[in-house]
Amino acid sequence: MPFSGWCSTRRRWLLSSMTSSFWSSLPSLQCRCAFFCGVRKEGLVKACFCFRRAEGYAVGSAFRRKPMAIANQRIVYLNGAFVPESEALVPIKDAGFKFGDAVFDTTRTFGHKIFRLQEHLERFERSLRYLDLKPKYSIGDFTRITEEVVKRNLPLIGPDDDYWIPQRVSRGLSAGDREAWPDWPDTTVIVECTPLPLAARAKMYRDGIEVITPSVRRVAPEMASPRAKTHNYLNLILGDLEVAAQNPDALSVLLDRDGNLAEGKGSNIFLIHDGRLRTPREKFVLPGVSRKVTKELAGQLGYEVEDRDIDLFDAYSADEAFITSTSFCICPVQSINGRALGSTDIPGPLTKRLIDAYVDMVGFDWYAQYTSHLA
Image (cartoon, rainbow, N blue to C red):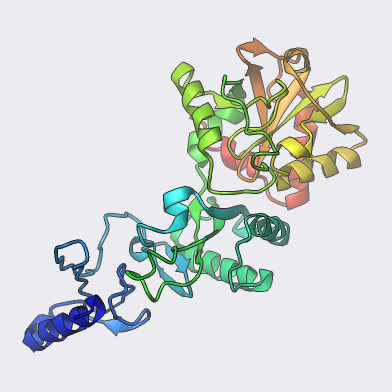
């Protein structure tokens, strides 16, 4: 008997053998079966039983009220449904898990309002095209889904908290793996949210970030373009691991193949020399939305911004430096490889002007949001 037929027969036998008292003892819930053994994807069921024979054994499992020990009630969008985060299950053979074969982007909220979602989704679409991923979703679809995910999760955080909101698409399952998960879509689509780590980062705004450049070099753009935001962060993670072994509080910024500053894991870097801003060329870094915002603000304030190669001589002789990212916005740098910068103020005067302009532009004091967590 084919596996799917055996599974259906076995399930019918199980269901017929269960008494009404058994069913009444189980909570009703929206169930999404991890193995897709014939249970309807959106079926309202009492429990979902999955049996695997292909590996030579059978396993029975029931989804209960809390199938995983996740201490939150956040809602996630997964392949067409809004489900509790603890029930958002992806096959173990999904290409995003197996190979990092996936694309994502991340925006955030300011005062519970999503910031520049369209710009993030346009970059997301460019990354999808680079990896030739073709989810059956438009930018408009992702916009509506993202807004709905945020709407459903805002009641779970306080008035002074905010969210990261990632959108993710993986290549899903290969043809060989699809036999075990026949109902899984061609691509895996996830939209989620996570509270920003405001308290954990507060001291960085007071003391500045200690930047260290590890020996690990950023992958060359002709090998894999850093302009695509993919799940394959191993290169950046190796840099983080090396830096964390030296100083757990430091942030890594990798050099490119030529010894110029490139980027950190999810962050861009700016240096300031004599009132001019310098940042690494886009060819070697992810074109951050916050990087773009900062360049716009600098222009409005009358400061020159150069995209150029920046080596360690430039870094060590800088008057000021700062990091930009979706969550950090602008965060001052205290030192680079243990060397203090020219300005002893944290943040430096020009960095402070840019922070103030950023706060005014979004209409929300995110700087005070971070620093309010200082002891």
